[in-house]
Length: 170
Image 1 (tube, one colour):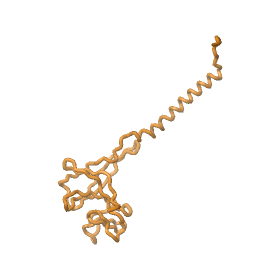
Image 2: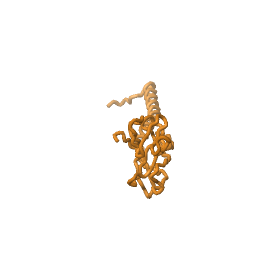
Image 3: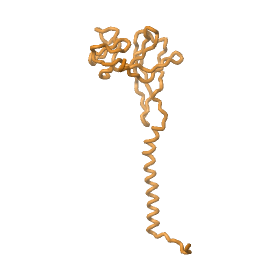
Image 4: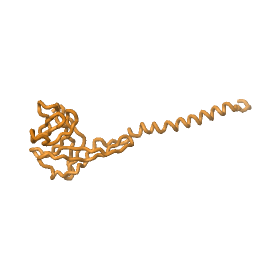
């Protein structure tokens, strides 16, 4: 090897320094968008959780009653508490039925005994849609599918509801 040391010129020193500082700054600018893209994917999902709707099984009768509750929803870093509703009753076998109040025709809200002409039916005021007590649509009315049902579970005598299950094939 040569005894002569390799000298770094002033131009090379500035080039190395500016490249290093520029690379460090670029890496710093990329950390935030990368974290924003990756962090929500790594968080644990709570979408299928059942929620206490605040009604005891003993309070549920054979007459449909509207039950309202809120859920905690997280979209990225934004948290909100949207409200949900269900028509809940016990059928002839004593099983609990929880129906979505959303009409399958245009998404309006149906009500129990909402029409004097058709008692004991769910009625949608938007286009005179009607459903039987079990949520099946009445032929000849606008809805082409039954009302969706909620996933449900009973814990310590309290009703817990989850996501809706479409019954398009029913």
